[in-house]
Length: 248
Length: 231
Image 1 (cartoon, rainbow over the protein chains, first blue to last red):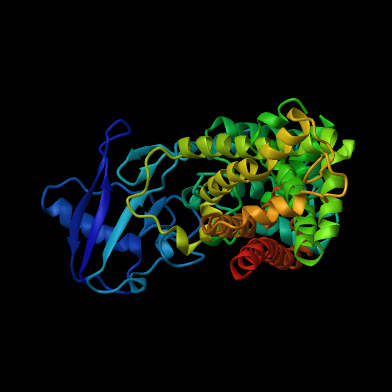
Image 2 (image 1 turned 135 degrees about the vertical axis):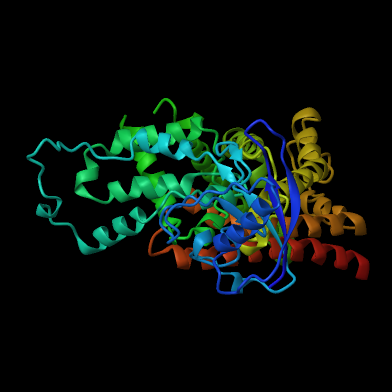
């Protein structure tokens, strides 16, 4: 496959940045999208040009580092995948492909296609945990019986990898699917109920302080989420938040 | 409780609650207006009751106006904040791949409805307030000096739809209302946390509501217009 790539180049966080055109030839349809970028970077290095900076770690769909907006969609046109799981067979020979970093004020661009998603970390620090004594006498979590449905739903919420595709896809740059998933995974389990009130209040407060937008229920986040996190998690977070606000 | 109205979730819940109120009002407004098609006398009597009963005039009407103003003002505030949350736009964005046009353009359908409300107030509400509270005529009669002249409400309604242009504007506005409701109805339930086993059924009901109510209003406007044109 021969392709034209329109890629966002930005030297550093304070640079204005612009789209730059590149050509890549002889791309195998079986390559992953990141492997295609590797090929392009080899070409650039051989020509003494600066390679394109992009984030990647596991390359098996669980690190959530890639942060690429491809042809107008987070992680490209395929569903339920991250960029490393996106194959070039999803494109046609001769295509022009737009590659941009995830855009949100709360996800500032560091360089080229790399964005700073530490706002998610700060939201997690605000309450995305349970306080358990780990000094040697930790109680086995399986000692507490949990209804199958709740365990499964909590697990589904916990599969969120915090990639930020929800924020990138949302027209408002809302982080509510991410926060909803993190609130839900604990709210559904007895271990999480102890700190439920503070958790949801603090996480939502931090989310708002980070400058994410307001959810208007377009559902784009759910469609683009590589892990299929459901909008039910946002509704659950809303209920938890209202309950917590009335309580405290 | 303190920070709830300043939080993103608190604001969207407030938007949803005002939306519920407005959707109930819309249903009631339609139920009364459709009477003008089937029974002008009943329409006149119900209109007179609505226009003179103190609970409706002095309690519910101010609440309704507050609800409308609140919904629009909060909508604009949220839109402004949302715009700020992405200061650099995508060079290519394929919004249609993951969300409906209605859900992405609530601000525009809302602005169209706001413009229509301006016209609707000019047509009906301001003259009504003028007649009742400035002129001081609470009789609801065509000629307040003639007791058997009959109520004026049906006559006024019919008269407004003599104009082609006004009728077309009303029809277009109701199409925008349908587009707004097609997303807004179910969005309001999601905002208050109602996403459960009844959601699918509710979504179906929401679509029926969002299409039938505006279609009913279109029918009323077109009915009175054609009645005039064909008479």
